[in-house]
Length: 563
Image (cartoon, rainbow, N blue to C red; front, top):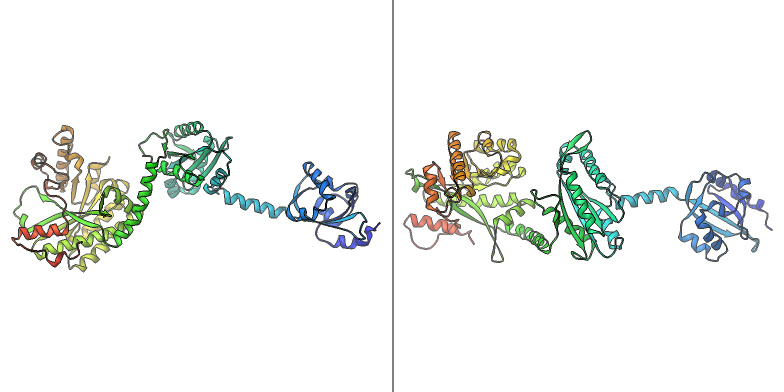
């Protein structure tokens, strides 16, 4: 038999654990100092052990079988093994073995590489790749992978629990506070319950998948009850609001990624006034609206940049003829869009314009068309004022003075022939910001109006705070003044208060003579609506000018830009 002392120097010199064992008995014959140091056994202890003694109990049958098998070399190359140290530490190792010469001596040399640190790091990276770093929950991609793998079976539902207000908390007080609030909600709701998979979709959506729809609905009710009160976290109380959507597999899609998206879409469609304990269930109609919205967003970009959005002009006239009616005109510029010959309502496409960042480009197009109308009036010896709606977007308003000045100079006009309208609901969000912006515009001579006045909760308080020239009474009031005494009283009070503050009042949506007479009686300054005149294209505005001037014949080249 080969004397181990012949290769003792080689064993001792190796920085990796090495040993020799008998193939038949699996008894250790020799171990180097690296093995002694790494495993904690003395050389004498090694010699009293077999290679099974450093293996977990469940692995010993396989080790015994492979130790005497011709497949052991291939098995060692293709897998990790687990070894136990003297103190019970589990190591991940790779093992290489070779039978010692002369052939048939019955001894085998093993070299061991401890890869525990590498596998630990690999597992950590795998965990990071599959989990949201902030909450520790599965990310949507990992959640979808598990669901597509059949972990919850052939049928399941997903609830998307959106915590509205979490983003604002993060923006104002820091992401650590928002994370603490989210974790409080997750902890209360019971992440980790059997039969469920939980995920998190930043910045504010908890995803819960379950094979039992009734469990999800019970979860939504508990979430709604919990979020009725402020969440205590980080030494404060924080109010967030629940908006929940539900989707079903395979009813709403063939892949988990689609089901997650459907649940999120249903949650986003939930109105803020809705009962948070009543989730919005995804429907095909909801999906169709979403697809249409995405399609319109693409088409809008092309239409705006190709100047395919038409601008119409609706007349605004004085309530009382001041003797100068024939020398000046006033209009509101309105966006109109036809896609494939079919009109798309402004209430549908304007919110899309704002959400995809096209507001500035559309506003520039509207200003360009408005100055062209003003220029035509000047050529006919008439003053003209065109009012333009400005979206409630800070970046748009910040660039508005310079944009307005640039376009007015291109047409050889002053900016004071333009009026700016902003909806009252926008003012409620940031009155200080708008007040400063209004002041700059008024310094330039631009007329400023508060549009849709009376629809907000703090309407009257803004009359004194904001440097506006005009308020425009919302059409919902005008339509009711002859039918509802309370609405009429509100309108009359607003008109008196506005006049007391030196503001003019424009009534929108005047559609019959009874409304006109009532508004005239109560001192309204100007009227706008179908009774006064419908929105007109540039060509129709020019026709009106020519008719008033007593001209006949074809339109001039001044209308060349009009489609």
